Length: 236
Image (tube, rainbow, N blue to C red; front, side, top):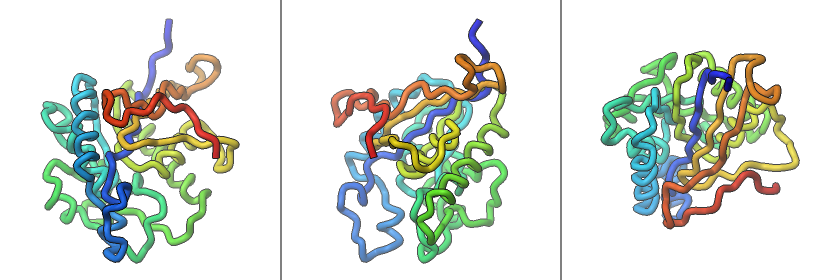
């Protein structure tokens, strides 16, 4: 008999952003660091939402950044449940400096009415995480915090989607799999690429492992629109 999972986690990178496409004005620091999606990115997000519409998700979470929220909104659209996106600053992209300032939930809600503060967050607090030092160990520490948050909150077989960012999602996968910051390989996250991890109770997973990476960077939902083959790992 197959073991019963505690959590099925779908980690999704946002759709193509204006900064990804080279369309954002680097002189506008706040907009450059917190861009919206391009038309192509919005189309990617819509296809993602349509493809996963039949998946019975128990929760959809997002970082507090525009490109992730806009992508998560496309997944929520048309769903009866969950009909909201929970926002948590722990999923903020790596490299956001303190000069960006703070982003309050009230600012997020003005643009994204489907957003709600994630459980355990302070609704009056800062909904982005800033770090001036580009230190991998600090990013990995935050990724471990993100995985611990998810595992503490979801442990009854829930299906959960997190929409975030390529660099931080790399650290999330490292954290989930118990890797350090300098393996001989890296994980590739393309726009709207989906990675699925399954977590089992301690000592019950197949092959002696309690965390399984089921697939990585799947973009079959794009169906011909810049859909890369399944990418497992890419050399550093």
